[in-house]
Amino acid sequence: MRVFIDTNLWVYRLDQREPQKGQFIKTWLRQLAQEHEIVISTQVLIELRAVMARKLQPPLSPPECRKALEALAGFEVVQTDAALVLDAHELAVANQIAWFDALILEAAIRSQCSILYSEDFNSNQHFCGIEIRNPFENLTLP
Image (cartoon, rainbow, N blue to C red; front, side, top):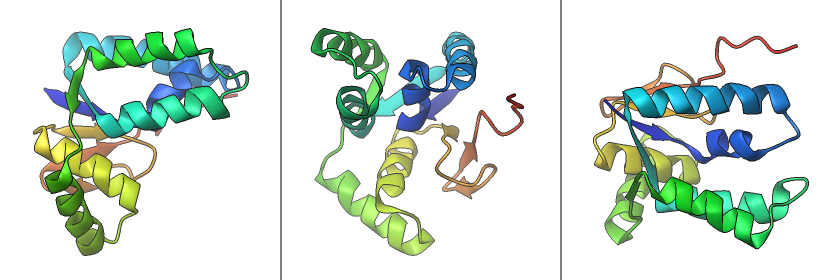
């Protein structure tokens, strides 16, 4: 099955401020990659780079950022082009969802994913045949 992973979940993998979520995501992503085909988009790479360099505490060094981006670039990457942007606009308007969420959702639709994993939508929503899931939904952290 093809699954799309939103930026925020990759961030937890690198963010030392929330170690329980980070450890959970590390294990979860490893299992997911063994069982499913993971898809991301250029937007995910761009957003992750911004977070790694400016928002993580401590921020990652340029070589560490490059290594993380190269690792993600090993997955299928949906290119953000003009048609995707225009279709995402229509998706955002029609479904009253945030602009950057619509870009992620449109990339998942275009790549024919069955599931979009994200914290930015309501879990168990469905858009154009894609189910939204939050991997933390049933997780209990201390």
